[in-house]
Length: 422
Image (cartoon, rainbow, N blue to C red; front, top):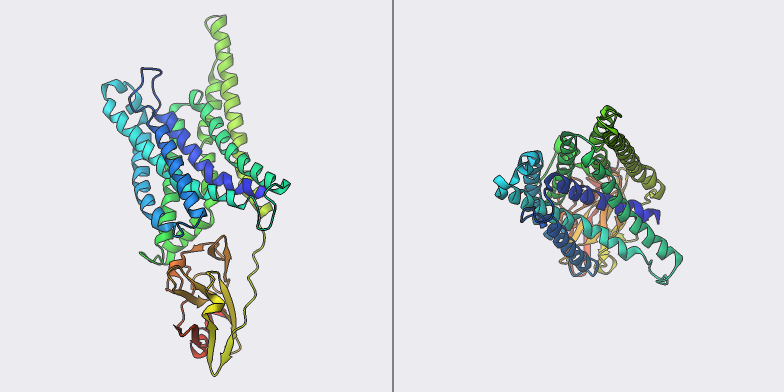
């Protein structure tokens, strides 16, 4: 249950906070006294959710097994929409004040917000939906207490995200608007950083090649993804403290008894909203630190497999490595260095072959998890299509020949690369 909880919440909380922030900043009027675009954000949420469910189902059933082909163009448009949403949020006061004088501007802002929400939901939610596929382990009965606990963890993860967003929303009437604007702007900026990190991760090793500081920044962002999620919650500490200040400054005595009661009610509401928001932020951090640590297990590399080694040639048959999973092999170089190399059959029938090491992370090795090949040291998921190519966190490529039902590697080529394991 805890594993599903700590996995689902980071995927849904940013979306929940984004929807809430844009709603608070751009909402105006009641009943008929509202712009024609008042419901567009909800439509964006609904359309994004439906599309995410469809995409998630297609991925779960392996109809689509290259999600980057879909996610890359989605992320390109999402980043553009995110930047436009930042502009809309920072100018929200002017857009909503006397909006009837310039309804087209508010409609444009709501259109941008709707697109931003739809694309963010479409990108984030499929991974959450795929958690449903692990409710029942292979060989288990579908109706067990374990399955029910996993389902409960999933629902609690989604529910907590909604509750945290709803709690933070209560400060919209108690905190200074400028303070809430700062928090809302920060949420959209952090979402933009998440989308930019994702698109660079997809492009790394293929369309672009990051090196040095740029690559280290990308790896840091990938490895500290949970910090970005926590930051999206903690930015609401700004309106929380503003709410406390507003409550403390509110005089308890008014012009009459009715106004005095109103002042005392506002103070209670302001301090209560701030306190519950801070509790929610602490809960998010505990979930993504203590909770994640409680479910994290030390990764152990799979043992090396047997292969033929004769006359300076390592031979591995196609039959041994054609299942699409990661296969690890070991070789002792002439200088005595124990080396490892990996082979995996990629989509389209080609083989990804390289050392079980990379130029950035050394000989930490790679492991397979949920159909992804992941670097053990930096926890980066490697784009399967780029295995066998230089750059980034890709396995160091090595020369080989494939044909006649086998893969052959000259041991002299392995000897030349032994320094990667020293």
